[in-house]
Amino acid sequence: MADKKILDNEILSDDELDNVAGGTVSERQDLQHAIGKIYPSAWPDEKFTYLPSDKVAPYLKEHYGIDATINQGKYLYALHAFVTKDKPNEYSRNGQTLTHQQVIDIINIVNGK
Figure 1 (cartoon, rainbow, N blue to C red):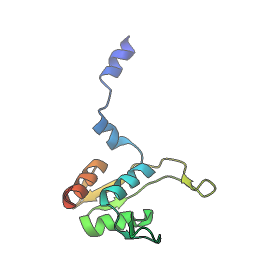
Figure 2: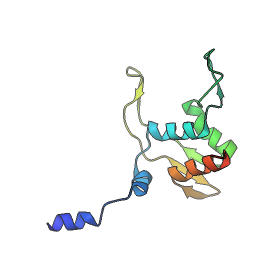
Figure 3: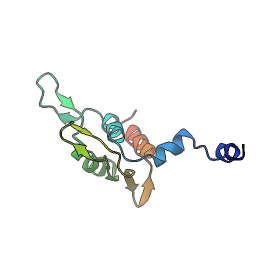
């Protein structure tokens, strides 16, 4: 019972959990979806697509003034997928550290969402 009482005070909210989760493909995808389909597509039936993975951080810097280190984990070519989580993504703007959710909020505000 004593352990349960200690844990009751240690439960994190969803917002707190978002801030401690390791960098993942889903976080990068969150950014891509918030930015929207802006990158010229190679597919004939689609004019634009989401930014490629390696273009997300430079785009954040150029369009939102956000410095970002996107940590996706290890990519396994045999599976065509990221197979591990990495350390948390790192974001800052004007020297101030930002959370993933704050970055999403900035993108949404600038894009009028």
